Length: 163
Image (cartoon, rainbow, N blue to C red; front, side):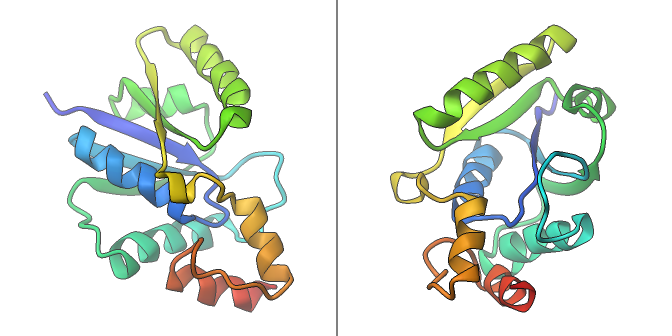
């Protein structure tokens, strides 16, 4: 039986930290569904379709990661509903620092209450990428900072067009 994991997020924009988690996820699971959220409290810089294209271009064009084990979708439901739809028992989440843990722990607990058959697995990005956040990348871009250490070429091109 294939193990399918769902990696949900806003990916606004996708960063090298996200990509680290994705690389690790495709080594652990038979299929990784990267689920780009259409909802949330955040003011997105990129719309959902743009974020999906940035994920696709970053992974396949810039990083040359095979698309065989990856599916990129958009969603506007509960993550547990998405898991049921794709027959996944795993939600993959990335952790950067201790500050992420409290929110992620609470989210995992709520998802567990919604469906006790679904497990949340936390992966950390490599040490070099643990400080990267999409929010800080957008701030650096707005102030004309160097983005090469944080995001791929495709994202740099698109973010410069937006800010």
